[in-house]
Amino acid sequence: MSSSSSSYHHGDLKQALVEAGAQLIENEGISGISLRAVAKHAGVSHSAPYRHFKDKNALLSGIADVGFEQLAQSLSQAIEKNPDNPREQLLESGVAYIRLALRHRQMHNLMFGGVIKKQVAADNSAVTSDTAFLGLVQIIENGQQAGVYKQGDVKVLALTAWSLVHGYAMLASTGLLDHIADSEEASLALARTIESHLIDGIRD
Amino acid sequence: MSSSSSSYHHGDLKQALVEAGAQLIENEGISGISLRAVAKHAGVSHSAPYRHFKDKNALLSGIADVGFEQLAQSLSQAIEKNPDNPREQLLESGVAYIRLALRHRQMHNLMFGGVIKKQVAADNSAVTSDTAFLGLVQIIENGQQAGVYKQGDVKVLALTAWSLVHGYAMLASTGLLDHIADSEEASLALARTIESHLIDGIRD
DNA sequence: ACCTGAACACCGTTCAAGT
DNA sequence: ACCTGAACACCGTTCAAGT
Image (tube, rainbow over all chains, first blue to last red; front, side, top):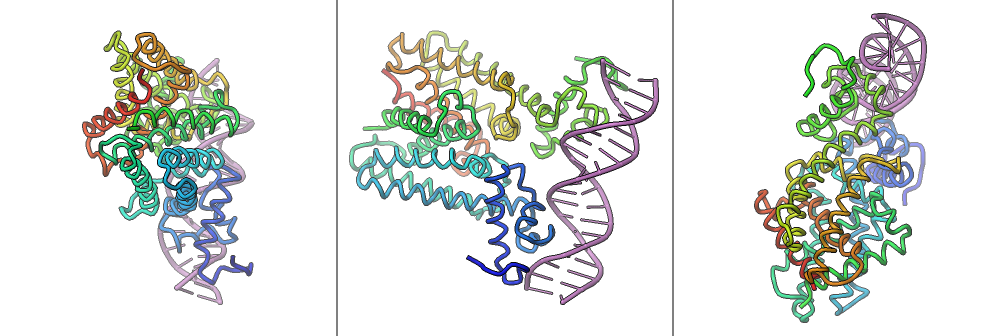
């Protein structure tokens, strides 16, 4: 946590901008985070962000990274909570993913809605989402060895699970499922049912 | 097809704006369709659209409807091409959905990226996506009676299939799968494999 | 080295005015 | 009834200038 107030001559403005943006998106929605609004929220002039970010897209990318790190953390928690149980690991990773999307719809939309144009190969979000995908691959590999999941290209099976969960999360977070499941509990219960259908398709 | 050129005093400006927008999004991307740019593209002043659309969101919604109607058409074609074959119907509907997302990434992003705030209950896009969902329900119901798909809540099974296909389409259209499948053929082949895993999960 | 403020070209929206 | 053009408050980006 940083202190002081009047000026940002200590090098933490980059972090302050990302935090201001992450807070703004939660309160005002994705259309509320203009570069100028983020700067004002952080207490600097509208041109100050350009000292730390190439352009608005880079700033948004930095803000999204907050969400990607939170996602990675939630996923590894779900995995650790269910040791040596590949079925529960897959089920609960999916639930964790969907829960985060529901609780932070705007952030999820920023992360996956296609607003951010990814330009650099070494993009942080790409790295983080790759890490998450590798975690998924690991779960399924373990499950294959334990005889829980069927044989076959692990990456394809992992992508199948990811697609299902991601699709449900997108439908839920953009409100297209509001008339089917109207509360978070109902949405997550439905998510479990749907995931179990998928697991039926990839089990041994 | 309308003729004339100089003026739009014949009532087809609404249609002309939607068409101009659909073309603009294809060429310039989603960030290129400002209300002013669409108006200029249609040959009218920047305030003319307000005679036909409440605001920019309503205009975007009208443009997205072009995509939703195209989607509905593709889906019913896929169904008609495979009569009395619920497995192929489900598989090919999904492929059709994904192919459209890949060929018109920007339009797909407009339709499902969360850019458009849906306000009215009788929203056209909601209606169209409901129609598409009902088609899916129909396929699975037929499949259940034919003994191809397992028993259970039809809507939940349909939502499972929709989530998978939608998630894969989102991942593919936002470029997150570019390093896994680098061509349209490769992407669609992978889509078929993934869908067959799902069908394994919901078959009888 | 880091930030400010004026400047520029754009944007969505409104409203009086034209036909 | 339908469209225009000025006006307003905003926006992203650049750049000379300040400390």
